[in-house]
Length: 358
Image (tube, rainbow, N blue to C red; front, top):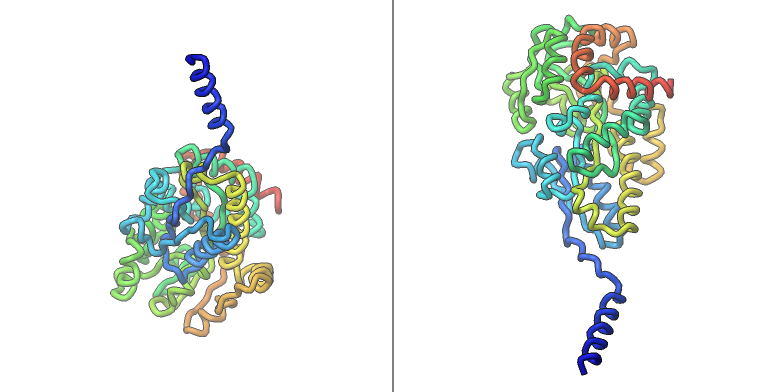
């Protein structure tokens, strides 16, 4: 009898081992954090990703977008830690907001680093697809967040109540609202301006009350949806830095997806990259953005940002290469100091990536 029982137990165990492993069920909702509002280019890009994943997974992966920093209690720079710790599942995040935790993400904020390139968009694409982009991704993942894609919020341009701004001397003494990152503050001080660290939730009130004379943000992504002409009448197209966006996932959440769904998410992230870049570049590139958005039936109402700004009473200054070079010279010390902080190897790799597409 003992032998029989032993045989029976072994048979049951063998049957259990033969059963297919059952994956943990997916969450009914995954939270995706986006800092600005739903109508911003950044916000629309987050919604595009969530909708695409839901459609292609046939509802199996349901991502809900939380716009306007709803998950961050008003503190944008806390997003990385909340994502890493699992309070957030996904984030479409700016390198600016994660740069306090990851120094390498200050690379795109080196003043006029990309602006002096023959084609600034090709230069940015070369960085993200090249060695330096991989180095930035590795730096983030080393700190505990999985990156599944990159896209773009656009070059940050200057708008002011006083102007036009065409040379460093024009900025002297102007109070400019900036984010709290030290590289922004140092850049504007080098240009003779008075940078004012102010949360975006307080910024529009500051514009109305004259607390600051100007601000810097991407044109299509933020300034057009905000109707910046209600506050400022001068726009300076100087391309001084760019605002790349990372599509990050909590590593435990990422591992919970099947290999097939991981592949699906990567494909959706790649499509989101094209969409986000097209939104940010619309009316400012060689026409590729317009053609792409038309092809997918996602053309926004505003397709000519310069015409819209001018129609609303703004004076638009589109700086020449020589004018941008003068601004770059004025901020040379900032680039030198921050190259050492970011990492000379990373900055060198970025230079080589950009040189490959000249």
